[in-house]
Amino acid sequence: MTSRLNIAALAPDALKGMMAVEASIAKSGIEHGLLELVRLRASQINGCAYCIHMHVTDALKHGETDMRMHLLAAWRDSSVFTDRERAALNWTETLTHVSSAGAPNADYAVLQSQFNAVEIANLTVLIGAINLWNRVQIGLHAVHPLAVPTAIAA
Image 1 (cartoon, rainbow, N blue to C red):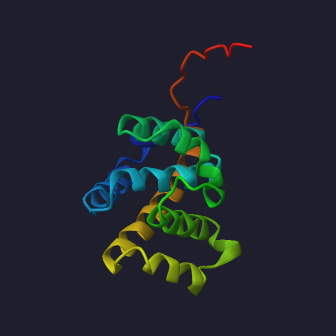
Image 2 (image 1 turned 60 degrees about the vertical axis):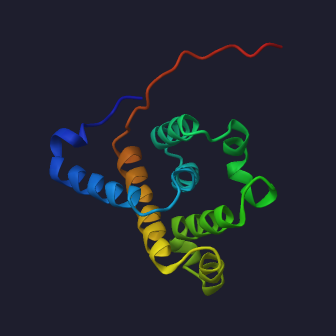
């Protein structure tokens, strides 16, 4: 795949604004690992290879396990995620599918059981931001770094 254009060169002020949102989220106090799980789950749903690559790489660098990342798409059926992570992942899926699911009170109540109002505000902004990043990267065909594939022993 070839990238369609360089957003940093063509829309630097827009990119600067998106980076300011990211900086704000980083200072929100929500644990880094949880932020990466949310980013990764939304990117999986949206099919953004560039963002999946970025957030898997970052999560690994910060101590996340391979197994939890492999199980992320099936988080509802796995016991490796905490109640707090489950609430955030549920809200991520709800807002990523907002056009078909809305934002039901039951999903918000689950979120409230694990997060305070400031955290909910920041988590909601994060989910909106990663969905924007996904759409920018998919729409412009952003190409993730390539790694040399390794053969799987039979």
